[in-house]
Length: 168
Figure: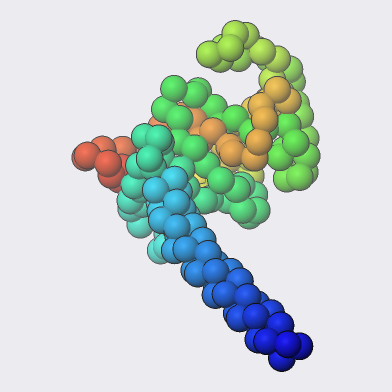
């Protein structure tokens, strides 16, 4: 009777372990699918200087890509409706950016107070600019930087379908 109980325990243990392994494999498979749909440019690497950058639109219709501000990694959301690069206040602290003169910016949620700053360098793929105008937005949540026209105006943007090509 004790041997029968031990066999049932081992059988149940193996059944549970099998399900854990199957669920883990599903997680790994679908995590990659989710990442590809929501952040298709996550693997964008720095390329040769001034090489064109080709971005894919994500599931929500946005162009999101990794980049650098002053040599530190950030996540950009391209925003042609933004005059300047807009950096969340908490991220600006992490990047050691010093807030400058206060000014006001119009947003979808109304007019807000922001602080001017100049970024030593901004890079997206192989495209890099120095001394770029930006502002620190203490009201902005998260860690995504809005990559506005103070950077994008220096580039040629070509959109075809779900692809955006940026080049100098």
